[in-house]
Image (cartoon, rainbow, N blue to C red):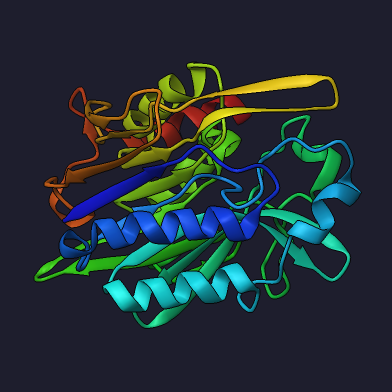
Length: 294
């Protein structure tokens, strides 16, 4: 199963140009893309840091009917692949830092970033409290795994031949909060897709720890380059990576624009153990939580 991470230098504030650059990259890889899963960074069409919320508003768009979504749907269909991409979502007068998923058959669903940095709070509403969802945070429990927009999570199956990996989506800072990874693990997710924009090394380290704790693989897709606004000069380090449930790095990009591809070969949820040092992780977690509450 071929997982690809598209690590670009984003053209600031130019959605059409960023989308065209991505389409050209796919065209160059066309022979190898059938059944692949391609992940793009957080806010890949716009950039991340703006002087004012008003500067971002004309660049944001509706999901799934905006121009970027229509183009991503067409690309997924043309190449027979799955895509997960981060973009600025406009819903009425609200802005969300969102990610969308498309497959060959069309729109799968969206995810809205739950964890907010000081930059997110300048422009975006917090994800959660979606119409029809129960509660304002990650889905904590379920009687059986579900697909699609499950509460405030996004879950879908990626199938190639006789193999299926269940995928979830989280955006950048979300990975710092174990409640999100644990919520996906409870839904029997195998691979957490992680569109990102970051400069420091900590998020890469946190992703490895979260992979071990939640018992799932994590694919972090970052960007490269710089942008400046609000007196802040942001430098994006790249180094997109894929880690397995043991925190081992399966593939990692460098600090330049790159299209990273890795063949995944690890057991699905049904095939792998959740035992750590001989202990069932979920049972031990519940015992600790109950003791702390007593």
